[in-house]
Length: 212
Ligand code: T5A
Image (cartoon, rainbow, N blue to C red; front, side, top):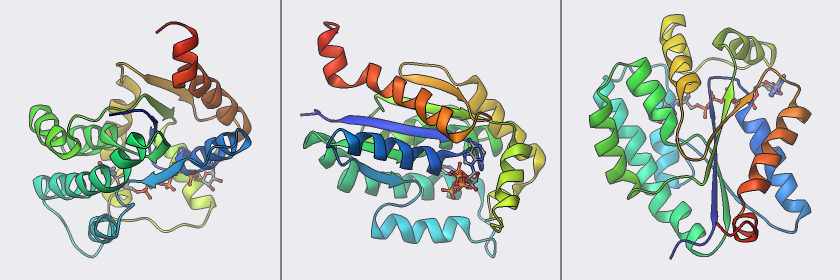
């Protein structure tokens, strides 16, 4: 039975997802809770190997193959880490999840959304986040941060400006249950504070207190 709490942080390259995940983990730590932190693609031995394949600029990957590699990594992560942790009542914080696939493989690569939804449901068993925090930032600002941090660009980061504009458009337009947008142009402290308010409002005990 599902008992835990599943938070996902999404957004364009360099929007500050990893930074926010660390801040949220620290906030949970102050409450005496140690969340399970995962990143996508990755988070299991198999998924980390798939990540290397996906991000390596040395190998071009055809779009449908790319989709299924992301989903293979996700299926392994959900089955072996995320679902067991949620069933044990743990908080799970994921750096990217299914909205990234919709943004990159449907928006960016142009794959069909029905194909994505069907295949993604098979990979996740229908698991949905309780809260998805979307960090909105124009791609050029995110790439500016990556350059300033001196990081090299992986295969997907090298996909070009028009690709990343299409990706950003899907993130900006995302709506649905539990999806909240945050201005990622704000300083990290403010982004962290706004995100934490959203978490607190949706934790299971907050829902119980509100009779939801
Ligand atoms: N992908 C992934 C798909 O195509 N389909 C999928 O289904 C999935 C799951 C994964 C790649 O795979 C693609 C998307 C990606 O291209 P990744 O490395 O996991 O790659 O993800 P990236 O987005 O590339 O991660 P980054 O580390 O580049 O970006 P983050 O995590 O968003 O940013 P972060 O926190 O590392 O910050 C970047 C820099 O900005 C600073 C930080 O200090 C750091 O220097 N920063 C800020 N500066 C100013 N203001 C703020 N608010 C800041 N927050 C952070």
